[in-house]
Image (cartoon, rainbow, N blue to C red; front, side, top):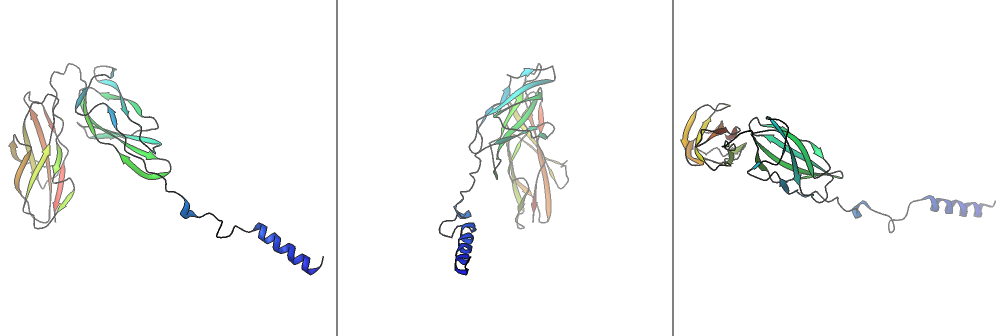
Length: 237
């Protein structure tokens, strides 16, 4: 084979094995980002209601089916369920839009759903619903534990803060809340009762820089039922 023909064949071979040129090749810049999941809409158990459609197992337990609407760009759902009496939380994951669980009867619960994708680290969390699982022979329900509004839990306040307004909210299926007992101080858990009030706020509470404060609310109703909130905290820098 003469030198000219060898050189020509070699060039053709290299060209056929090489990648495409810059004008025709693909680029990672053309890849569309994976769409993020959207938040699911909760259906059942409904918010601030008594769940009385579960299957009764015994006097202590019943089975409740949690239902939510499918969300976009979602492959799985993580259900977060908290027993509001104990603050214990479970987080089972399913690929369906419902999940049946065995719950204690006569107990308040809180639940939400987080939408997840197999192709993205982004997540979306639904709103949070509270409900009472129907109890055996209960005629009047205890209030739901109070929820913090202000100061936000875990917040750092500016170092020139000398007073704060404590604000919370609470609800009761029987709508018979009569008072709130406010525990506040530097101890965790707080033990000092600083007020008993009919309002869902306590204004002009003295604080000072360099301290962390803890507070919680005991909610009482007309039937002498009560609930105690989680411990809320904030720090004054």
